[in-house]
Length: 124
Image 1: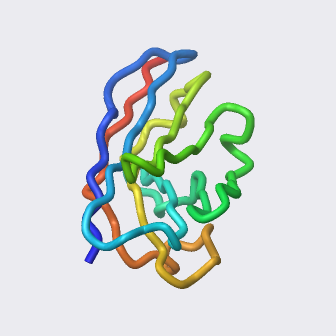
Image 2: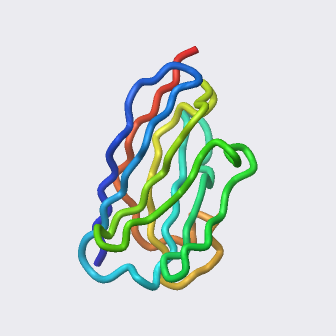
């Protein structure tokens, strides 16, 4: 079992920044893929970014490329999502997820564990 706890969400003005954290506990995640997804009201959950833990390779959705950065801290078993130049359309609940086996990181069904989510609201 893996437990994922997100933090760092909040209310920010357009153009501002937030850093989300996802702390993992339980079994080792050193061979996992870790992803961030988001879901706005009335919309499907969408892929934001992912990182392959063993080598740090990163993957990004086109909509956030150049503005968001995913990273990891091995010692803390934590993955981060640095979000800059935020836009109102970035408003959503952001979820952290862990994929044990699949490498199809952009697909929600690939992930085996999910956090509870953290709200990000960007005002115009």
